[in-house]
Length: 185
Length: 185
DNA sequence: TCGTGATTGAGACATAGTGTCTCGATAAAG
DNA sequence: CTTTATCGAGACACTATGTCTCAATCACGA
Image (cartoon, rainbow over the protein chains, first blue to last red):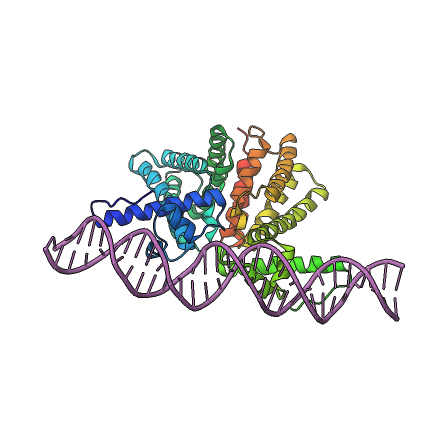
C-alpha cells in the first residue's frame, strides 16, 4: 500500500498511524502475537522502518494502541445507545446485546493480555458501570451488588461471545447474563 | 539456581523442565509476555542456552507448556470435588467456588491469549460441561441452554475473579453466576 | 567397579531483529 | 519561492535466535 500524501499534514500522520495499526492487527491474527516484529510491520505497511520508529517506539506500544483503538470504537457504539433515550433497563439490555455482538464478530483480538493495560478497558468498565447503576436506581435490576462488580461480571461473561458458535448462541448468552442481573435477592 | 542432579535421569529431566516453566512464569509476570527471551529464561533458570533448546524449541512452546501445566493443576483440584461424592447441584457449586478462588489467587497468568491453544482449555471446558449436565439432569439448574454454552458462560464470568478486589467480591461473583444457572425459565 | 551412553555448559557461527543515526529527496505550509 | 516537516534507504552497534561442536560430567548396567 504505497503512501499517497493527504491534503493536510496532520491527516497524513493520522492515515499512516491507522495503516500501522491495521497492519499490526492483521499480522497478529495471522502469525500470533509473539512473532510480530517492527520490521514486519514496516514492510507490510509499505513504510520505512525508521519511519515506523517515529510513530511507535516498539511492538508492544503498537499492540496497545491497536487494542485501545478497538475498544474506543466499541465504546462509541455503546455510547450512542444511551444518547438515544429509553429507560435505563432497556438501555442496559441494548448495551449488553451490542457489546456481545461486537465481541462475537471481532472474534480474534485476544491482545487484552498485554498486561498493565488498564487504560481503555477501565473506561469501558466505567461506562457499563454507569448504565448498570442507573438501571439499578430505577429498580430494573438488582441492587444488592455494587454496579462496578456487576459490570465486571457482565463484560467477562459476554467475552464468551467470542467463542460462540452462532448468533443464536450469543443471544442466549446475553439472556443468561441479563437473567442474573434481574434476579432480586 | 545451580542444577543438582537428581537420583534418576528421568526425574532430573522433569525437574529441569519444571524449573524452566517456573522461570518463564516469573519473567512473564515481571516483564510481560512480549519481552521474554530464550536467553533470559536460560540464564535465569541457571542452565545453558543450548540445553534450553533441547527442552523447548522456542518461547511460545514454553509459554504454552506453562499454561497447560497451570490448567492441568486447576483441573486436578476440580476433579477431586466430583470424586468426593455429594449431589450434582452441590458439586457444581463447589466447582465454581474453587475455580473462582484459584483464578483470584493466581491473579496474573493472562497468557491464555497465545492463540490456537485449544488443548488444555478445551479439557477444562468439557469437565465443567459434564458437571453442569449432571446438575441439569437432576433438576438443580436450568436445562433450556446447552451444558456447553452454560460452561463457557461460567468460565468466562468467573474469569472476572482475577480482577476482584477481595475474597468477598469473589464470593458475590460466584453467587451471581450460580443465580443465573438456577433460574428456571 | 568400570565402560558406555546420555546430558551438560560453554562457546562458535550465520542469520535476523532492534533501536538510533544520518542522508538526500520530496511535498506541504507560509 | 522559501522554509519546514516528513519520507525511505541504509549504516551502525547491539541483542536474540537457532544450530552446531566439544570436552566434561553423571547415571546406568554389565
